[in-house]
Length: 567
Image (cartoon, rainbow, N blue to C red; front, side, top):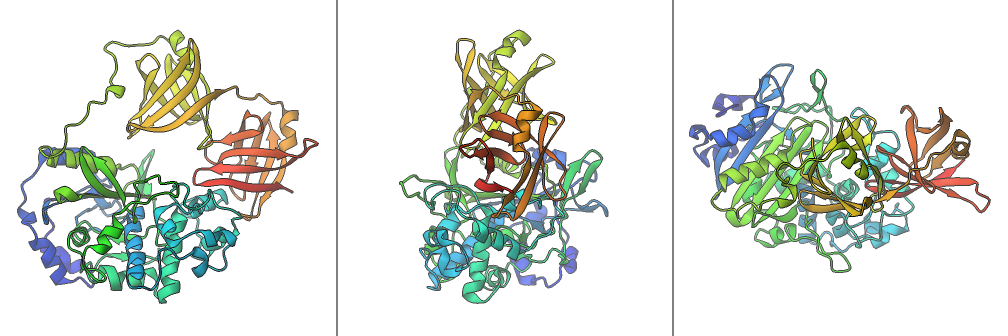
């Protein structure tokens, strides 16, 4: 843990702007700040030895009130993090991309109601129904290019593909996930397209445009979109992921920006944060900020919380404007309480960090007298002394299907406890709280599972994540198919939308699929013609009138209804 960063460290920052750093350092007496044991305790796990960690910044009423760094920026050289360390902020960068597009609209270079087809004529006819603003709001229905890449066998950290590959993949899609404007589904594709929109309109890359119109005017000299993964980034915090031996390096080989790619430090977030109170970008004034922080409304009038790369919500009685980021070995959270002029920034260089929860805990401590009291989570409170025997747990055992997200949940009793089994290697204990109510353990979020019963029979399983309803699961009888029955699905299946072949074969009474160099993955029969793999999604096979398998449709998170034809 570092109490301050000596000024001599600034000599190692190439092209640093002394004036900008002076503004930051003089904005508070940070170097003399008193320790806050309650805050430091929140980050205790990030300060134990040579481990990656997090940097923290807290602003209140236009001044730094706390800045700390916990853990190391580089494990090989045992280099500590500081609040000047540069982090990949992943999806936090979306708010900067949305700002760039909003500035283009403000200057009259585009209209947010322009169609995608106007700027991407190579796209199919569905592009004419998508507006630029729907890309911003994640209401376009465009399939997520990262998920498409994963389904095409390009899911590893070291898998390298280009912007052009991603755009070509999007252009191959024959349909969108849903009619534009009718639903919300987070999609990195929209923001990658916004980056290329900037280039097609201005002739500047998003990196160039961001420097000239956003970072430069705000004095953010060290902040940049990094669109070349081989570039040397002074003061970079390296990304890590945990493994059996501690940590291993977790960095990307991708050069896409727009959906992410903004490298920034805690210190330089000060100028960005303060611009939301007194805008100095574009024409100046509040109109730009109003646009950036106004959430979307779907065509049917349904309000969502997503605005311009920002989520506008509530926490303990106060409005919040925030966004998190998660990519390879980096995790990030920016959370602003605009009514209180209070902001928390948490940037981490380890994949197991939970910066959103860390930021909330910091706010709980530092705004203890201003936030509404925490509502007692009665749902997650266990009845005193309540337990269930192994025999009593058996009635909750079964298979359950969530139709909207197209995946199965399985419950099993193992060693006298009820478990949610996600795959042969992944499971979480379900702790009984009261009859029919269980808490899922081992997760950073609060996950409640409720069983709706008809006597001893489960009618429905409902899931709540952090108090929000997230899925209704219906029980089903899992099919048990013989090798002969499975053999009708064997063969090669080609997706023109992925330009990828999935090979299916039967071995040891199980159906397997493989693609490219990826190892075989099991497909488990569920019901009807639907099979599932916990990593790739739900495969629903299609047959002709004679019962011959013609192909299948794949539902996989941010990609819906992807077509494969049997070869």
